[in-house]
Image 1 (spheres, one colour):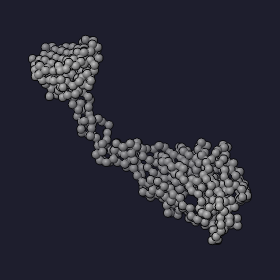
Image 2: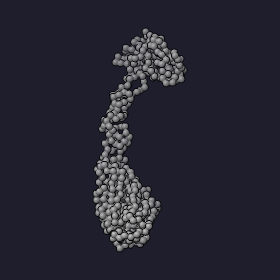
Image 3: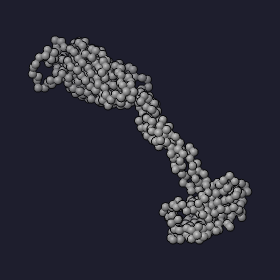
Image 4: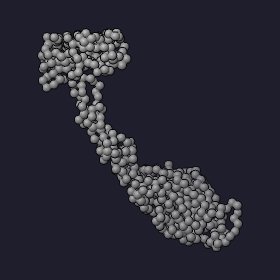
Length: 533
């Protein structure tokens, strides 16, 4: 309120420099009350629009039973995230309102001091009307006190503050609301938006909702040290009510922004202030100010960090292949590794290499050892009659430790290779164990027996220890579970150009056994039989 003939004794004394004794319930402070952050969110394409209307009766001696608020400026396609209705009551309080014909109970934001009218207090309230606000339009407010007698409760005005968001891919925008109540009389109000993150210089939008503004003169309204207006609170929404909006500058690295409002002869009640500004929204696949990258997530380990910055060069990553050694280039890209430790098809019959993708190459292991005699028999008939039989006699020195523990942990794999001049090809492999089908004959090795041939058709197997020239290996598989080879041609099961090789591996030790067949007693499309020597 303007300090006129109706001003309170308190303000008269302050302006005149008088000294007097206050009543015990009256605070000596000229600025009374505070604001606190009630909403702080990072929204894609977010922002705030606000508008207000007067309800006061004491200024122009006309009571107002309702007010109409027009909201505009919400972009098409936006979603209303929150809608808050604010009001200030001089000389009383009221936390019930009728909004769009619906009764709403509000949150009491507190009571502060005088605004230079006869009543010594003002109160503010906030109603959440989100469910009743769909977007731009005209909204009706009723049910708040409006009185021509300044001694009675009288509502200065109402403001509707609407928070909205846009599409998920829109730039991120920080939206902050601070509310409560602060009253001032011939003094300076100061309040701060704290914990700001401003990656680059940007322009924000600042709103102020205040009551009791008149044409008496208010002093400067500032934001972050910059004067926005002088004598701004003049009842722009009607008598004693202002909903003001300003573009404000935020500078890179700013962590807080103080706004101030000075008053001269006028006395004001502040109910809410808001700030919204661009702050990069990491994870929306849009590279915004302050971001080096944005890959649509907030996870590290993919060369674009959880805060949308480049991860350092040589940081580990995964470019989607199985190769190990993938590393970041320091500019957001995961480079293909050259190591093969990440490539493993779990088969001892192949060797893995990496050239962007993992490559498994059938490879005859040159470290495997043979025996004095060998036999390989393969029958490709009806599924039930398919069979593979391999025997090695007079094998290398083999002790119990070389065999692992197939009862509990060790798997055995039999690999069968054919050669076609250019190199070896893996024709089939049988893997069996570990399982209870194995029986330990320690120190003489292990025997395997499975009448059903559950594991790749293997029904019998023997791995027997012995001195050099005394060990023995045997594997027999039969039936529908046998992974039979595909015939090389209509007349031959193997090309055997120049050899067929069989190797037996275990998954625990490096020991392995093999047979090389350079000729065959039989090599038809359905049968292969070879012996050595």
